[in-house]
Amino acid sequence: MRRYFRAYPAISSRQQGADRLVYSEDDLRRVLWQAVDPTFEGERPSTIRLAADIYLSRPIELGAYQYNVSIEGSGRFAIAEGGTFTGSYLFGLPDGSISDIDFVGVTFSTTNVALLFNGSSLTAVDDFIFEECSLELGVPLTMFQTDIVVTSTRIDFDDYPAAHSFIVGSASFTGIESVGESLVQYNQSDVVLSRTPDGVLCGDGANKHSLRVDGAAVLEPAFEVLQGADPLLQVGTTGYVDNRSMFFIVLNNTSGTLQIAPPRHPINGHILTLYFYALTGTNSLRLDDVTSPVSGGSYIQVNKNHHGHQPNTHFSITMLFQQVLGASYPTWVEMARSENT
Image 1 (cartoon, rainbow, N blue to C red):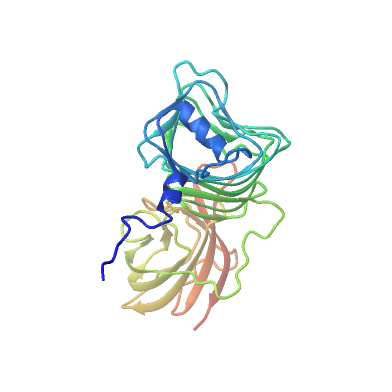
Image 2: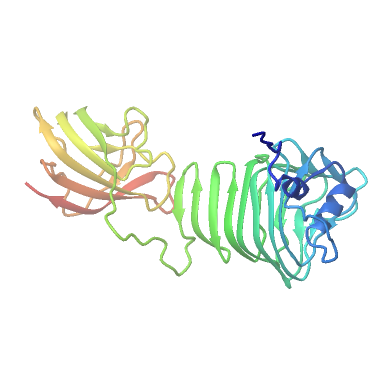
């Protein structure tokens, strides 16, 4: 029995119709309109693939529609401000609700334009996704006009000129902004969570809980062995306590006064707990005020009733870092201690 096989599945013609290649500004405008044109009778585009850099002569004015379309640049092609461009933004957003447009691997390139999406206080944007996009700018850029309400939106730019300050710009932005190695999650423009190469920030200082933990919170300790006279507590030989908040310490033939290095990124409010979990050899080390630190050390202020105490096994002390008002030197100030045996 002879059998026949299709070169493509039956649905392929519909899928091919849903994918459109665009080579020019006119192509992009036409296909975007086909995605929402109520009189269009063909297969609506779902993916618009840039086949070349698209140079605009004027802004693209979008409509108050649910577009359900993805614009893909494959990491190669840009939507750019052309040499004859007239306008102050690349895309115009209408009064009303506009949603469901994805930009994937698209570079946005501008020379004089400082705004990507223009709108008004009557504009509501929902579910705009920017994934693995890039920016090439001649001026600092704002993403959305200030009055726009933006929700359920994710902004992910891999490449951004360091000299510019990327700004979401919305008076009410709910979503995620990711630029390079930094990420910020917003809820109605309040920072919920931000991550930078320096660490993670919960909240933005508003009158809300910054962090609630339903379970155990663990401070991962660093282990350090201190030796000799006036030993300096630091991570290895870095000259800093880095971003640590907990140290397990072994004292090995120590004497003099404990010295503590500053944080690598000195921020008022850094909390540091020291736990002395083992002593070996002979130790006469004291915890005391330090007003003349050793090289790499900080000033230290201990509780006025506990000058000169020697730490024993299972002793712990918690310190607060601060820049003393009116002085340039960093100081660790005692907050609490537990002199266990």
